[in-house]
Length: 156
Image (cartoon, rainbow, N blue to C red; front, side):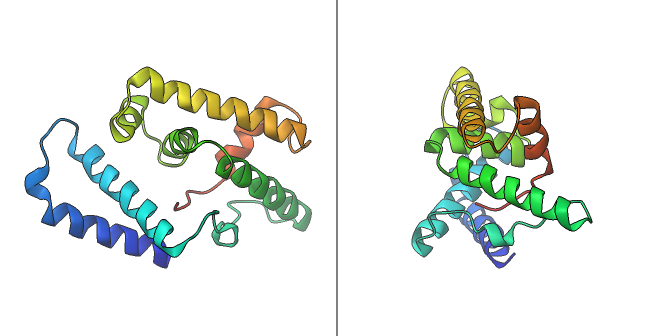
């Protein structure tokens, strides 16, 4: 939680000090989110964290021990598979699934065309599907989309 709070605080400080640079080419929300995304990336880079801290990811539901173990294992494998994706695909998946942004907002943040943002997301999902089905993590595509929905929002 400390990482997230630091990023949010740094983001608002940077946005406040750079408010005069906001040109209105995109929405204020997109501009602020881009600052936050870059702040988080820089903070991770400076801490030399290459992987998601999976210990900070909490189970979102399920009370039975078997259920927790299963979901914890699947969640861990999904997050590791996401981490192995190319950067653009990883960002598109994170922004779409975890931040619930539209493809237009994703395109604005990634400074790419709408169709490219959509393609990065789609190609990332297909790579996840292939990676996870090769490892027998999930039986079919439906399972993947359902499992991704149970992963709580995490800070990159």
